[in-house]
Length: 519
Picture 1 (cartoon, helix red, strand yellow):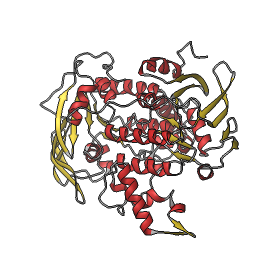
Picture 2: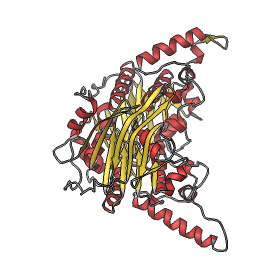
Picture 3: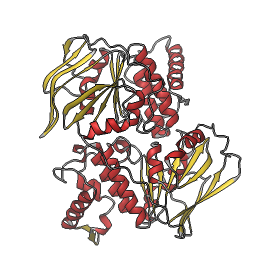
Picture 4: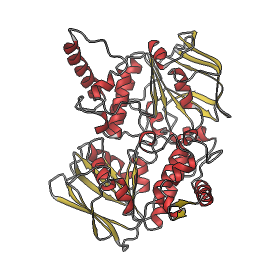
């Protein structure tokens, strides 16, 4: 949480500066006309958690991908153990004890959790294959339990929530027992409990002499976890310093941005007498009593819980992403039972799912095409789309959302993660006549992009649309929402009206099942 110091913030571990485990020396990397890295020199030492901060497009993920064997530098050298290396594949990097957990999940959705954890490292079959299967199952369960995640390791990954998939991705890397582990936005879709368990594992690896590189936008995570911080800006390394208890989130934010950021503005109180647009039945409180929730026009309501708490199930049922008979909905006074997200959108309920790489963008399409997919019916007549109208709408919307782009006809994959997310948010908002359902809307994007999206969400609510938000970012949930429902083991723990930052401790206690006041 903001301003909170690292757990047991003792002295910074002793570091042997004479011998870095991995070094980049004068590394540059271009993607077309974009200079992603500009003469970057940086060392990663054993027994250290090194956090790399920067806004979207600053180059921090590119550093991880060069170390992880995905990219080769255009200039400069990559050194491991003091000697230069030239990785051609991810496998080459893994062979040297380096592993990376990518922000874009690399799981095979139709394979089981166990198979995914061993993907790429399977041993050939033989007379002991059944014994090996049992050993792999036990190893899979053990590494997931260490992350506080107890899953059926034989179910397909596609049946898991995005947060659980993130933990499987991390567990997959941990099973390789790397000497250096790079994690790109590992907490983007994890709640308080999952994050706490992950941090315990990372501290244990550090204390065992491993090198940990954390690429993140979450300054609070840096305050709690980091031994060293490096700051990237426009492809260059602009600052690097050791953490100490006197450095809080505000100090780091100022060094990250080169100045003070405007404070996040809490959402104004809702209009108590506005009409109810959405009713949710079928919920239950922890004591078993039935619970019915009404959401008024212009209200932003947040759902908060750990992975598997039941909040995701409600979001997916409301958006049509999954059928769930335990919930019943009324929309504008009529029964609402969406068959799928397209059916929900036709009724005025728009959905932005978690995981933009797998569930959001169409990577082969342009920025313009990705944006206008939800607007085609109003950009032409008689089934024909007006090219001029489409381009004009794209230009207006991209400007309104502050998207930085070179050409609207270039692939959307050329945008930074934050700008991709702005395009997806604009697309979702275009279909939201009554309700906008948001699942992890700002995961993995920088502070300025997050605040910009918060403003757009508030604007939409002010226009009369109600917003249902599921976010693992508790600060975001409190600052955006008029009310927050906490979930524990499939039931509603409490409802907080006009929540404040002073409610954080009680909310976390709710979702961990430790709050006796929740009933």
